[in-house]
Image 1: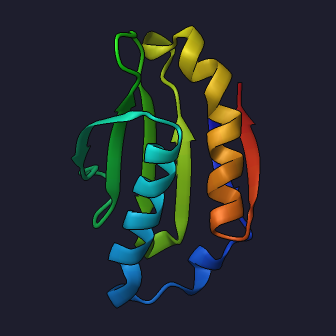
Image 2: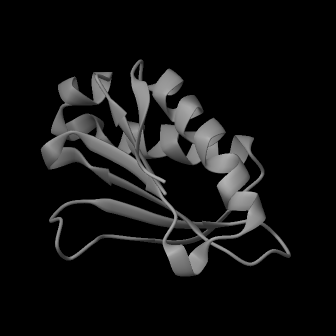
Length: 110
């Protein structure tokens, strides 16, 4: 399952403002009382920010990737990391991200 935030102000972020975007993403994560279990970069997407998000006491992972060089932000649940909590929350979190960045949450795959 994958959502991408489209037609947002991320298209106009200057390199010096990337950390502000990262903080805004992490604020949304905290708003939903989720746990940031890892923060890294994807080797295939140079300069990206990639988070693994969990819910306390639950299995499953929600992945969030922000790739400033391409002005892209997406949320994804890998098939082997699906759980009731992340499937039920991904749309709401994607819509909150879209609202935060003045864009739209587009469902890419179910």
